[in-house]
Image (tube, rainbow, N blue to C red):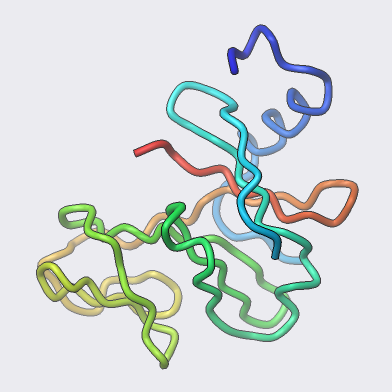
Length: 139
């Protein structure tokens, strides 16, 4: 979808998603829409699906994990910052890269390399219907 062909709702979602960065305090499968060059918005389902603290990996193949820690609900990239291999979620809520062995803590901070950069937090918003919308860069 081109930016000049957005309806009002899509424009509002894009505008809010563009402003929001990192984790935000406070499913159904993917319903995504391209919102700008190199980005798409993925509907990660109802926020009520993420009430318990923990790591949710249902959207790993779409580029992100949902993480709930108390009142903090965020989305972290599911790709290693070393060579963009797809990460595995571990039982202790950490992340492991099967390609080269990098590990990340539950907040996405590098614990062991070769990765040097932390996992990016992706912009999240909750729409008027209580749906969690995650802005994901296209790969």
